[in-house]
Image 1: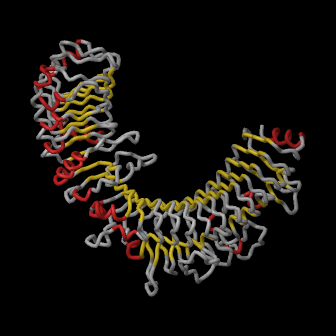
Image 2: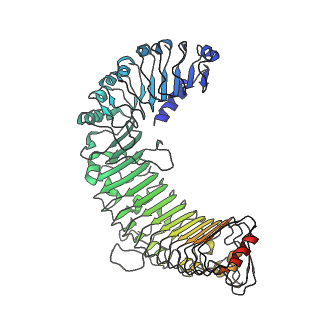
Image 3: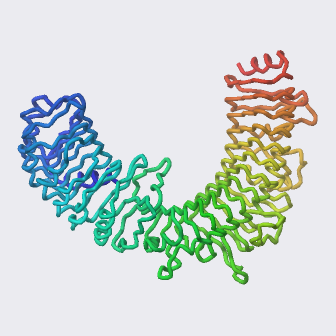
Length: 635
């Protein structure tokens, strides 16, 4: 948040015609010193400087930004006396931004930002002299104590203590900041602010007027039931754990975030459920709930999750299902849903008997991830249509009870019974996600089928990336009726699936406009976009492709085959004497294939492009003559 604080005040003060000095070299030159007398805004990088020039006279400057000073950098004692119109002072990554005696001259200073500074001096002069301050930030600075003098800043509207490790706050500071509207107190390196009981009580009082709050409550013995949230418009609040940083994304984003690791009663007593209607990112690790609705007190409307964009549920030991159909359909903005490590969860959506017939629609969901759910037996217990029109990524990991992903039968209703030995399918037959691009499957021990093996045609989607790992009972990756899935595929990874015997079981009767052709003919456009294929640890796979499939790989660039113990050839050919071309191949890696005797089981000619990278290791049945021939044709 500190970057946003600085950006907003710079933007406000920058309005007008006064020029900037932006100097990243030598600040001591005569022209810069002369220009500083009329300049209204100055930004200086202080690397290599020991001090500012003594004749650095800036009577008209309203904003001064100093960055990246060495340990030797010092301020003149009369520094602020020469800048009587200074309104914004920002020091960033300075080792010791000392507070000169002349600080008392800065009566017009409204904003002081000390970001990533190694503060060693007492900060009391700030409270003693800068009584007109409205914005004060110590974000990620080495401050260890917020002294009682800071409580004198009765005009202060924004206080930023983000990343202040093990900070202690003197009693009375928060109590006296009566005009405070924004308070940022999240920490760095999992070393939080050292709240006292008095700090908590003062925070409760201040919360009545706060419009923005970022804070982490680590001790569940503190019940925030006396906190007031009705004026909050911007917040990041956690209870029982640290706020979860977003991997690969801005940790200081403006999304309203709640992270709750507690039991149901602590949550309801805290009153934080009144923030759900404004929450955009919700992390739940709550004990004692059977479904999501139980985190709402009786006074909170059931549709309070309508602003959620991300929902992450983990470690809920008593959670048997996540939503009812009305709650699920009320998540009109959810784009990302993650559910993991819930040991008794059986369903995502549950419907009472007689409630069937509705469409289950998560209309904006783009990313769905299900991890470590040992009792999960399906998405829903009904035959209702599941509509996920925006779903782009589906990630399934450690779901040991599921035997298939897509339904094989018309009747697929699921009872919440852990002892059932019936086929357990994640989605029923009526599931729609036309935009699905990425499917990742990992450690699903009971999985037998991904796509239905029956005559039902798999609905077309935009699948580009497909990976399946450690699914020991999976035999067929792409069955004969899944041809419509192959058109857009760019990357395929099949790793440690020891039962897989067939990679592409292609049957052209399911391909449009090819009903009357011979089943040996494969339309060349089927795998037209495939660029990367990795197969490893598939000990029952004897070959990768038939000749027609291989010749359809016109864009294949990377082919890596490893640890397939019974593989005899890459290409299976019935007649031989064919011509197989991998015209765009850039890398061919073959490792630890003890039974591989050649590229083809017959006398087919394999054409490789010039300059292709070849990596061969552990191929005991390959002859030296074969290897030389391959190398010569790739030169």
